[in-house]
Length: 276
Image (cartoon, rainbow, N blue to C red; front, side, top):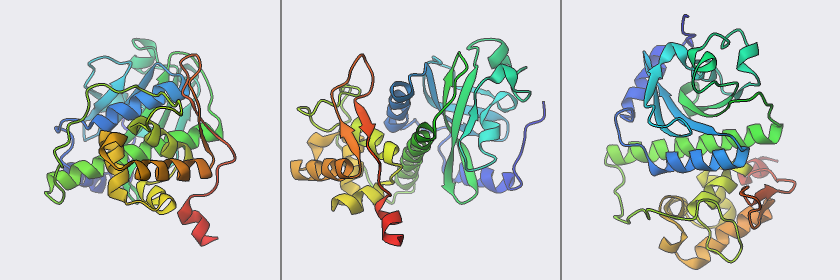
């Protein structure tokens, strides 16, 4: 089957190769985003993918084991990177584009797919952050916005890698803890990196937008997201929490394994509000 291509495919590939990320060790943030998505959407599979000329590279995943790449012609994400919107496929067996796909007719028997493009600059989509299920399903507008927000977090990680690779920022030498509570939003526990990422995704806020709302620096927020809240001052953590709660995020204890995170009527981002 021919692979669908955007009009700027050559430019897209140049941008991907400049990032030098295909062969790089995947960021721990990629894996965290996949774990957050699996719990938020109650799906068995979540992936971070990059698409080069011939392959789909799976840089992080939950639910597909050690699968590292597929032929590009079999990638649902080919269609995701054609536009900026989230692509939702409620039932792949009923969709002519995917019904004969070997990953639909065989393992892992994909029925549902939703993918948000990884947009690194206007018109440049280097891959996808996607969730998959083995049964048909739909998504609400809020869920679609949340998935798009998680994709923005993945793009943040890609730019951090790029800056480190280019020597424009240096690692601060803080080891990443090997184990943290995955998504426990109990109020008596410290704010974790997973909580902060999940809350930003729920609001569809960038790092800069949270920095503006909380009055702390973007580098402090990135440090919390990379290394945890115990690596920064407590008042900075509380400022971030207050900004998220003021914007409509509620932190609560998890029930039955579900993520203890929900939104009230979520306000516009600080950037959008300033334009009003």
